Image 1 (cartoon, rainbow, N blue to C red):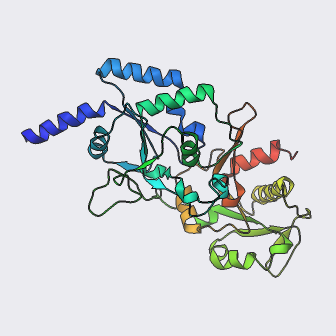
Image 2: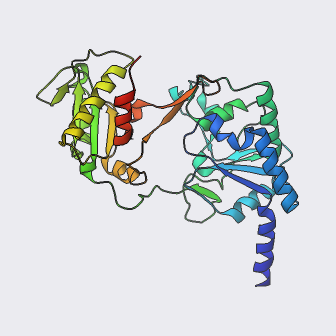
Length: 347
């Protein structure tokens, strides 16, 4: 009992040295760095904590809301490191081949560049935090597109420090319980959303009626209760709904808005009155209907919401904005659908 008490006292003292900040999944670099790069806020947090607890904040730990953290193990790891040096610790990942989402960086050999698995968490020393804040005042981030925050952050600080792989930062739970951190599997938030509450709208064109749509139908399309294939040409063999909108290689705003108007018209007419979510997908999007039903159980369908993979465009300027990339599909609520149809126009 005495040993356990001493261990708990030591752990509590060590806790005061760790600043934990949780960042949301798949955010752009500026959002991952918010706890660090808002200099005045960070200084205020550090000053208040140091004054109250009479200890220095030595580490910033960034993770996802699903990251499991064994705090004593994590603290024991960090205690062995020098927080007065630029330290960047995590579970190292690398690309096997150059990737568009990573801006084709390191085209010749992308395996040489390591970036952290945010699901396992990443630890930044106080010295690295100071180095980053100093750099930002002299060299603001200039990326046009923000896609994968962990990769872009690692690239931004590459000449300051390289990521060091820590085996206790795990990509999944190990049977020997040696992990200090690992991402927990996703779980539904209660009952799955009913099949009848989902409306799957697939954007396609005549060019891919025979090439792509059979793949969609044989994988997930036939597992959806309400799935409609929208094309510029009506084809009864599939069937598709004709939109009378010419197909274009880029800039599908008019096509998307026409689809949204048709869906909202069906809902208002009562034909689809039980619909709560509209899932817009491309004809080369692969998804799981059951997993979608589980995921959407965690969100309120009565609010104006859109869910998908968020990209950022020139976020570090006043003209910047976030958007959902269409390739991975997007799910939006009926209240948001109404707002888009009633208030938005294509340029």
